[in-house]
Length: 182
Image (cartoon, rainbow, N blue to C red; front, top):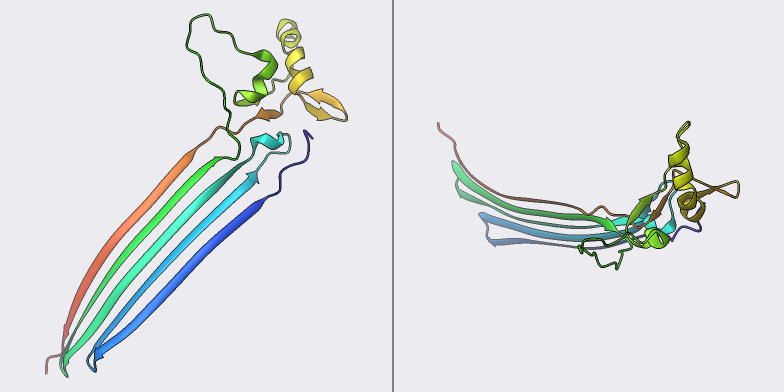
């Protein structure tokens, strides 16, 4: 284990309101609105990952509806409905690197601070690849996942890197008219 994992947190704030209105004995109007916001931190870790690699998410959902009905007479009535739905979602790392990227030719990667530059997948030795295995020994020694007190390859150090945003929207309306014949 790379160390203690941060505390998982989930926070939700939610509000809902509904109004029903009957301005006359033949008209009924309903309107409702819901707003829900949820934030999760430190909810995604693999077993061989450093505490800084955690990621979380934020979701906001808004739903509004308005509907009404009107009894015109004993043979017909009219209805209408409108809905507005919004779902905003974002997955993101809990920790962000403050590194400045250099595009200057000849710039070298800071091997002593790979865990501060982004997500590092610590390489694993490969049977029969002596040159490669010799090359990765310092990386495993510095950044390796401790197994029985010995650093090994295959772990993750640094910061999560995936930002994922998916938003959904829908607006809909419908109207109806019912006439009874006979």
